[in-house]
Length: 74
Image 1 (cartoon, rainbow, N blue to C red):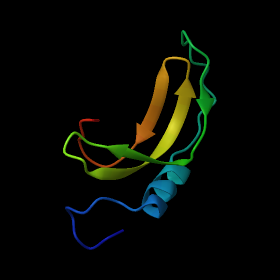
Image 2: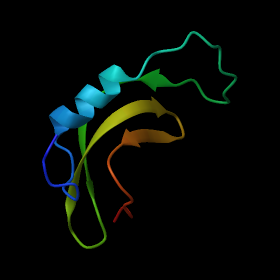
Image 3: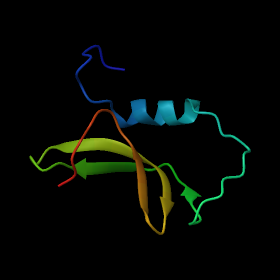
């Protein structure tokens, strides 16, 4: 990770964190089937900044993203 505590993580940083999160065998009762998929992504904010992210899961209702900090998509 970067030395600067205010900097955004790189895609490699996000990938390492996702790999360190353990998978559980608990059966979730969700209304939509979800696909766990980790691929690089980018989010553009209202101010025009591009933020690195990784997808966590995809369903018919949306995409779960993993990123650092709060952001408002544009």
